[in-house]
Image (cartoon, rainbow, N blue to C red; front, side):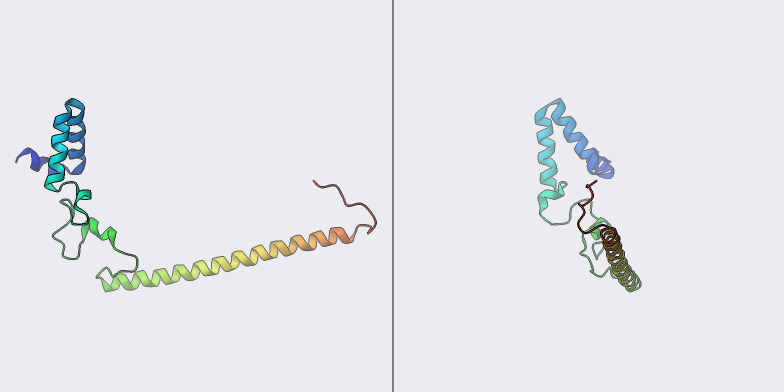
Length: 135
């Protein structure tokens, strides 16, 4: 197996390390390695959306790491999983609504209790007396 094949087996970190090492030791070597990486398509960012070398290209539906790029709500191709995901998301949204409602009720109750406590405090004072100092 040649050196390019070995580096491909290791993956992108090996190419990056070799390029940095090339720039460190003698800059034309690093530049040549960088040009090779761009020319051969090993730097996916330069291919503008086309599937790169280290993607799982033999999966017809774009499996492997390419799956992470799917949009929210898009079908995975597995009906059982899609139904489970839809049910779980529905349940989580319902729990979130219930939680927010309980939070609102608790906040309203706390505000009302504070209002009643302030009212009781001011009702016990003499109307002509000075207000108590803040603090």
